[in-house]
Image (cartoon, rainbow, N blue to C red; front, side, top):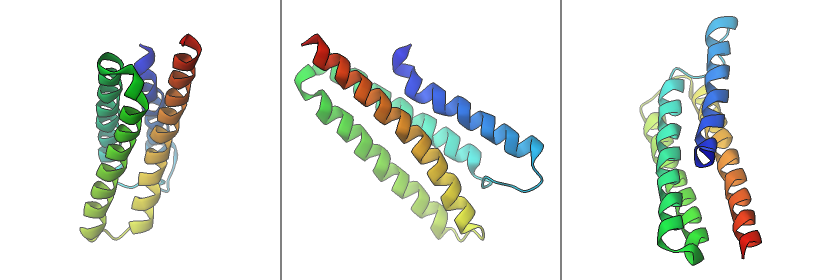
Length: 126
């Protein structure tokens, strides 16, 4: 269950803020693609989790390589998504970029926190 925390915590926080945006505000704080962003980052979190699990099974000595490769995959796929959405010609580009980076950094912070906690646990066990 602990390995799901980097996905569950930002997802719950994102759902809370999206719900508040939908119900309690007259002005829209998130872009209309907020649900796409949420699903996209849940998917990326799942891929990242699978890579981390594979690193635990395959080779403990190269686990940091797997962690950083998962972060690079997340970064490249995020750049691809935001590029496609920006080139589609959306009118609210600043809202799109701001919403995207709110989701990106919320998931990224929890992934880094999990990475540091996991590396600290691996260092203590050696």
